[in-house]
Every structure is written in structure tokens, then in C-alpha cells.
Length: 163
Image (tube, rainbow, N blue to C red):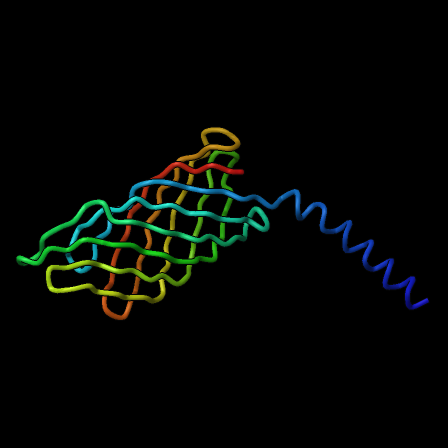
């Protein structure tokens, strides 16, 4: 009897997982990020890989590599890289528009004429995506990085592709 109950429970759980798996979605983005870090305006190429467990809840990893530096008070500043992981809460407004909020942890390294600056900490942001097709979209977002040594506001725009 115990074996039958376990087998029946496993069968029910596997059937319940089919709709959840059908709603799951992997995606990637590539784009440009403008970074205002303590007055230094630098630019980066930014990429993300994400996975939505449901239409509303997901996780994404992010990496960015600096391509544009700045000079602040005679000090040259370049972003070497940034990496982070976020939990994402999405509100599908229509088939063409999604709004989202995200929160997570990031780390970044900046190269300055006075030496490298490394920082990490909490990050959060808001954004939206316009879905041009069922697979392709344009994403715009803002993320605030509250690190111990550096605070930064990042605006990014990019191409999004669902897999």
C-alpha cells in the first residue's frame, strides 16, 4: 500500500510539472549599458542569461565589459567588468509588453589611474521589454548598484531573445 501511495504521488507530481515546464522560458540579452559610477560616466557591453520558472518569476545572470572610459578630476576611469545574479519578478502587461523588477548581488572592477577599485554589493532595478515577435524583444532597464566603495546607476538597452 505504501508503494502504491508513493507511485501515485509521483505520477500526480509529474503531471503537475508538465504545465509548469511548458511555461518555463530561457532567454538571453545583449546590449549597451551606460554606467554613472560616482560621477564617472563609462560604457559597457552587457549580456544576460535568464530563466523564467513561470511567466512571473525567474532568475538571471549578468556580465558586462567596459568599452568607454571617462576622466573625473584628472583621474582616468575605465570599467573592467561587472558580474551579477538577480531574482526577477515580471508583470506581463500584454502579449507585447512586459514590466519587471529585479534584485540581486553584483561585483565590479574599475581601472583608474590611481589603481584598481573592486566593489560588490546589493543591486536592484526596474525595466520593461517590448516583444517585437514571440521570440525577439527590445529591453530597457535601470539598475542601482549599492556597493560598499562605489554606488552606480546603470541604464541599459538591448536585444532580447527567448530560446
